[in-house]
Length: 177
Image (tube, rainbow, N blue to C red; front, side, top):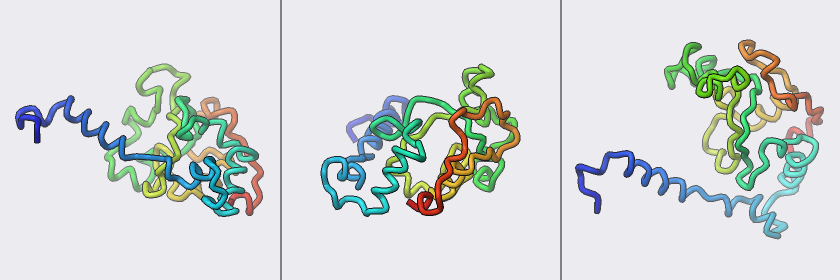
């Protein structure tokens, strides 16, 4: 209310609103954070095994390696784009939309084509979809995709797929964890 009405809808006030929103997103109350701080009861035994898989055999930490479990790296994983599934209808996108080219759509460099930024993993539970194209609707689907390591999008050249995208050989119990 302190901002004059004529100035309320500007880039400056938009940046204030976004910054205020981001300050509401906290990770320090996540069970994993509590566990790291020494609360041995913050996570279930299965969650602890899952953390072991994340940092061990599954190798998730190769990409999700910052304090917020993201990175500033970009990778191609060969997942479907928005227009290739029902979610795409909502976003009105298609094969000519520059966003399907990932980072390459902005840099115009061939080596950046189909590569997308590694997202942070905190506060994703209520989102309801995963990957840039929303091709996975559950965390289980994500883990199975990485476990099988078979690119689903035939439009992404194999030469662009991240070198680490290889079968994980997780057992059914490890996938559950």
